[in-house]
Image 1: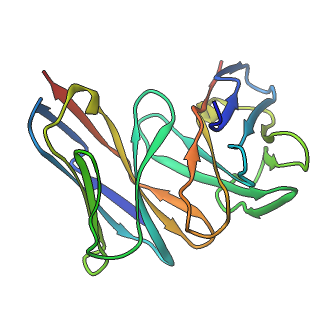
Image 2: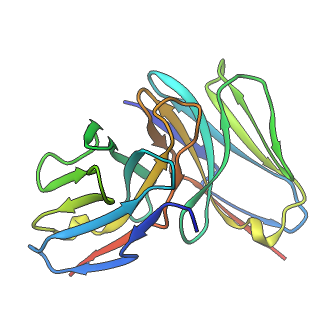
Length: 110
Length: 115
């Protein structure tokens, strides 16, 4: 059965800390790996990774894919309270289907 | 706002009634996807549609659920004879093309509550 596993499930840190969120997958017909940030409403797109070893960056966020290890990490440096959210990892499979992990709930305390 | 639009935001139904959830994709997007998020669980794929075609409905329950994306108008997810277990957040996403060059963008979801 296809699965995407995220760890940790929950993380509480202080503002300014750096965090690393993990995502591992066992999915047939892998096409891409995506990260989303979900606050109270729509998951908002962060990164889409298709090639192994190439880091993608956007401000304080970065992510990289390791196809050999079937995993990805999402790093957030100098965290702010506005980074508090659920971070979702999803693997694109076959004809456009996304398989989601259960999410990591990140809480940034001031 | 040119994002994915879903309505209603909240929908309350009694057991046995019908629920209709609507989704208008982003401008220029012709591919629509529906996902369901049960409490404390991740999003689960339900169905992928293009205009007038269902491409992949492997995640749809076999009974009571149907989806359409007509030539004109929004995509509709229809749940007949709702039961308590249908209570969930239903998210719609859209993309401009069917290949993996573009990510899916999500709407705010419809929260369905069954009394």
